[in-house]
Image (tube, rainbow, N blue to C red; front, side):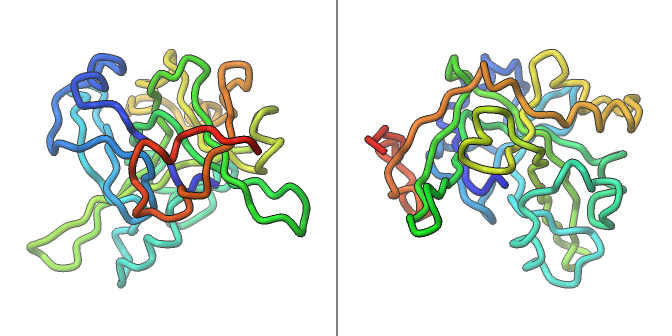
Length: 223
């Protein structure tokens, strides 16, 4: 599962490091992005423009937008089986921009869950593999929403959690958005990012409260 993440770079830095296009809607750096909030998304590999989508997928057929609260993640292994995702994998793929994410580890059944922060070893920004959909509560309005795809954990994250978000390597990042890529090739991309290229550190339980969206939530602590 991926339930919180960060995007702490300013817009110009993000565009340069990820070779992105223009911002359709501007954003501010965030240190504690939570479900139902807006996240920065790219869905076109040509323009690479950056849009803001709601985190928590609302399928086009939904009767109530609250379903999105339960659809923040999609398991890679069952994408082609779930009604909410199996059509999206063919035509509504996206990249969700990030530079770190959180997981909570339990060091024994009686211990409270402890948050850990995961980044790339070089602290560079990256992209999650995602799916999106468009929901229209009425003919005049629409909500674009997305979900982060998860997979089995690599050797690092398996010490803390049994799932991890799919991070797209640089060499295949834009292939994920290519409409000509076959389904078997797409599914093969949904694998754990190499543990040797990632780092982890314990952080304060300040992260537990979404309102705590400031740099101090990332300060390392002694576990």
